[in-house]
Amino acid sequence: RGEILLVCRGNGPGKTTLLKLLAGLYHHDAGQVLVDGKPMEGARHAGYRELFAVIFSDPYLMRRLYGLDDLDPDTVKALLKELELDRKTRLTGRQFTSTRLSAGQRKRLAYAINRLRDRQVYIFDEFAADQDPQFRHYFYTVLLPRLKAQGKTVVAVTHDERWFGAGDRLVKLDYGRIVAVEAPQPSAEAKTA
Image (cartoon, rainbow, N blue to C red; front, side, top):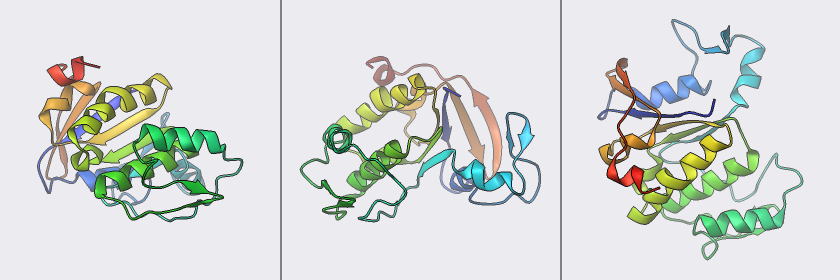
């Protein structure tokens, strides 16, 4: 809890598969997934998935929001403004006026929706890769530290070595195996937070 874990390595080592296993979207063939030392099996598994807010590299967005009661319109407006989406879409009733957005904007809208759901664990699969340099900087220096300060757990896949220092731990994968776990050194970009 309250940790930023960055996952890195090139294409093909199993980063997305690891994220899907972690989030309970895939079932493991061997080993165990433990939460607070207890295995996630059977009936506990569905509740386990509710811990996660996941944004994969190509998120699917529905225009209508489901499962969110008592939405505060001012909170939604503030989120859209912060994420530089307020000129692209807005929430009218329970529906966004548009989801026809660029790849980076789609990920930011998915982030806004997940923040409204307020989960404990946030998983980002190459979230920053499609962002412009300013928003990429904002993601690593403002959004991730804010989640951490709120006691959330963040697992983010990145290829960008400049941002390795934004995490508390860096996990390196090589074709489905963890090859290194280290405490990264803050980079110049991460230090400007």
